[in-house]
Image 1 (cartoon, rainbow, N blue to C red):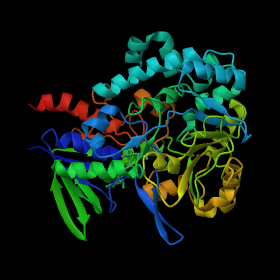
Image 2 (cartoon, rainbow, N blue to C red):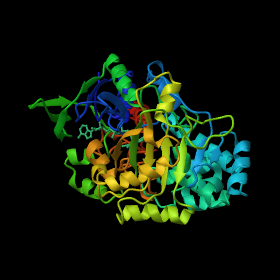
Image 3 (cartoon, rainbow, N blue to C red):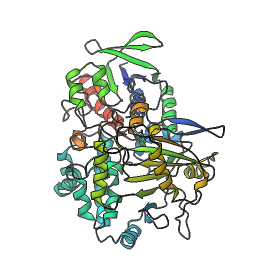
Image 4 (cartoon, rainbow, N blue to C red):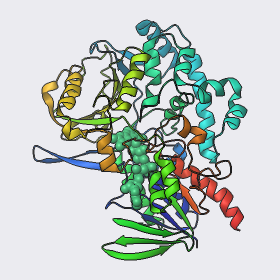
Length: 510
Ligand SMILES: Cc1cc2nc3c(=O)[nH]c(=O)nc-3n(C[C@H](O)[C@H](O)[C@H](O)COP(=O)(O)OP(=O)(O)OC[C@H]3O[C@@H](n4cnc5c(N)ncnc54)[C@H](O)[C@@H]3O)c2cc1C
């Protein structure tokens, strides 16, 4: 049986281990930390003497492909929920909001009425769906992304607009209202300060909507999203994967295929036929001692600008905005501090330059507690998550108390029971670097900018032939969040690299 070592036990390490083990490989996962999960793990706060689990990093599920959820066996072990209610968007006024309906006709009507949108919302949705179909086909078949295949599938016009073009041009093509443009374009900077004016930034919009587990929408996991990695790790043990925690790789001899590692203060070695790195993309190069390649990687754009505040309430949050029939308890909500794309871009770019610790952009609000109640998990405290833009890479959350209070008090304007807030946890890109080992705090490990996005999101020296191979190492792959399509609790790079591996390399071996 061929031996495969997977380095890293985040979602990508666990997904690739699962597929490989079920295909008759002997798989060993090596993890540096003392637990599995990477950035999809829980933390525990003690509030009023009670232990409260909450999502430390990732919170909501949405980018995973349905087939990955089913084929790994996760669908039998975790319960999920995604809201069918419209999303709620605020521009400062807590009592007045715009509803983002899933139904396109309802959405067109609402955007016209609230934001005076005169553009073509329906064509935007239709065209985006074509691009998403194309992306999902790449994922399913493990096909290398390329401009040529985009042209073949989408035609020259849509490829230019959605794949090669800038988000700024794309948004201006379909919409007239700055507010619509801001709402539809916000995911371009979801993880880091990608410029809206950069060629190739448009593709971030359909990529962020290309999950199929909830049909492009986002949702929740009963108890918390960490159940995904917790359960997958158990499933993997059942299918024969060995998982070595608290293990530090000291050296790799790529000629003899030997990994030297340290565990429990003991030095040891492990033989491999293939390796899959599911870490950030620079870690393999450092471990392999490949100085020239490391130097090249260091020049890439790594920076992240997202932070996260978890708020705990004594009683369920009551929103000021609701309509006559609905209270929209489990709706995702968004608070924008900018009114134009220009302002939005400036805030994001200024954070990148480190001009200020925090420059208000938008807050995505995830109603975790309300969703848990919906799934029958009644907890002691209501949890609301504020996924917030834009932070610089300078300071940790613990050193930014004033910033934290500004964000919290602006949020409390939107609810009727601010006095129920009892505790909060705050992390910034700097924390993401220290807690989760993300090089510069980007939740995609590596920014989704032009020379490192779509067909360029690879570390292979021969991407046309071996997209997921690492540099020019024959039997080493890279499948962490830094490769195509991006990060997220999805495991898509893991599945795609596995697919390319069994389609190509194994055939050559036989
Ligand atoms: C605050 C925050 C909020 C987020 N919100 C969401 C969200 O709501 N929804 C969503 O889908 N995604 C979200 N993300 C992004 C998502 O968590 C990541 O993209 C995803 O977890 C990356 O998975 P991965 O397996 O590629 O890498 P990681 O999860 O980073 O796992 C890599 C693993 O490799 C290990 N490792 C590193 N170096 C070594 C080494 N030398 N030897 C052995 N092991 C090593 C690490 O310890 C880690 O366990 C968020 C991330 C953060 C931090």
